[in-house]
Length: 140
Image (cartoon, rainbow, N blue to C red; front, side, top):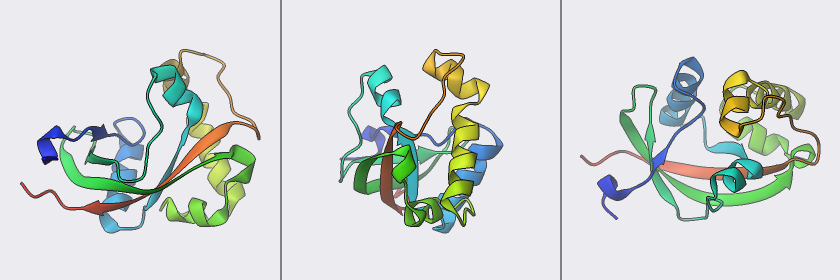
């Protein structure tokens, strides 16, 4: 599939966090990411699948690389493991730190607005989508 036909992959919301995550992707530090099953359900989108490819964009909407999904797991929030947390490339050294950082994002006004629920929250049983990916440079 030509690059121009690939879907777009966005990390967080445009701004400092997205810039940090894209930087970690480009440096090779970030090779995993986490999302919530409820987000896919809300949008009526299928969960990611191994082999899916997408163009990663930065805060300016510029294409920076192509990601290819190599592994997908759906687990309870309480069951996210340290290997996944570290592979997120955000400097987490414990699952507790990883969870605190992610819960802060998932409880942010921007995320709650995206979910259409001003009191959206997560708990141990919230279903997460753990994705591993590899990247390749753009060819054009």
